[in-house]
Every structure is written in structure tokens, then in C-alpha cells.
Length: 245
Image (cartoon, rainbow, N blue to C red; front, side, top):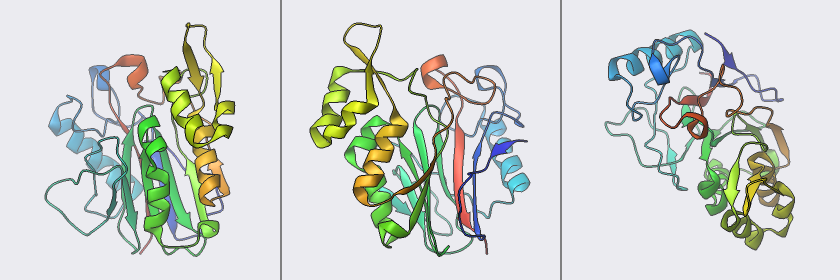
């Protein structure tokens, strides 16, 4: 089983990773390490994939999965809950509590503070990004933004993320600098959006300047990643962060 570990100067007690398709039991359109229980895969395979990942990466449990709704709610991780909360970000201030988000083109963002006392994970599609899921995650951490490190995990790349003009206009209405994150598409009236750049702009405005990652394209790399834009029905990778006990 192979996963991606952030290349960032996080404290030694911070553990973080993004999974790939490698190492799982799922088949067909979900082939590989599908961790999404809501996409139509066989539940037993998803559970087995999750158990395999937890054991291989030594992730403290129980695993705190979210019911992601492309919103901005942040869930404070507790030791256990019966029903996954409707939220698109998770935050933990205690060791041994993993923050987890799932993606298949949307942008996963992992956060930690320089002191190694709190972590967070956010699922940022363009809607959640525009509405403030990153800013909400920063606020939930409860520390100075200048003390926060952020890592941009695998998402759809700037040559593949085609959006309508209304998306460009919505971002530019809030930040004029966002214009630089869009280039004209060969498809008339469409634009290619750089979700990594849009995230960096939002983080900088919030006071987070230590930003790393942003080096992958889930759409173009079918060997490593699931992509909803590429395949429609597909699996999900997970980006996970926690403080070691």
C-alpha cells in the first residue's frame, strides 16, 4: 500500500497522508483502495479497505468519517459517534484523534500548527472554497493564522478543471486577484480554473502563508487517483491528519 506524505516542516508529532488507489480490494470502477462508502461500492470491500489502511498507517481509531455535503461546517473530532456528521472539515486539539476528508477531484487541505497541538482537514470543492471552508477550519484551530501550516493534497489540476463563467465571477467578486487563477478554455464560454491557486489566495487572505503541496492532478493520473470528472462513478481517496499520542 502506497500513500503520499506531505513534504512540509510539520512538528514531529504530526502524522499526515493522502491515500492513492494502491493496496485495496475494490473492483471495477472502484478498483483499488476505495474508501468511500457512499459511491456504490460493496460495503464489505470498503470496510476492508478502511481497516487495511488504518492498520498499515497506524491511524488511531475509531476513524472519524464525515458526511460531506460541499458546505463549510467544521466538526470537532470526538472519540466516537454513531452517525457521521454533516461537515466538510474536521478539527482536533487532542492527540489520537484523526481528521479525515475524502475526495475525487476536490481539494483536500491539511492543517497543523507549528507547536504540534492541533490539526485540521478540509474538503474544498469550488463551492466550499468560495463559501469559506478553509477560513472556518483556520478559525476552528483556535491559534494565530501565522502559526499554521497548510498542505494542499491531490486535486484536479489547472489544465483539466473546466468551469463556467459564473464560477470565475463569483471568486473575482470576493478577490480581484482570483482572475489570475482562470484561463480561457477552448470550449466557448468556459474557463480552466486553478483550484490550488484559488486556495492559496484564500489562505493568504486569512493570514496563512506557510502553504505547501499542490503538485498533483487527479484527473490526468488515473493510476494513482480516482476522478469524478474523468469517470463519473468512482471511488474516493482520503487525506488524514492526526497528532501522535
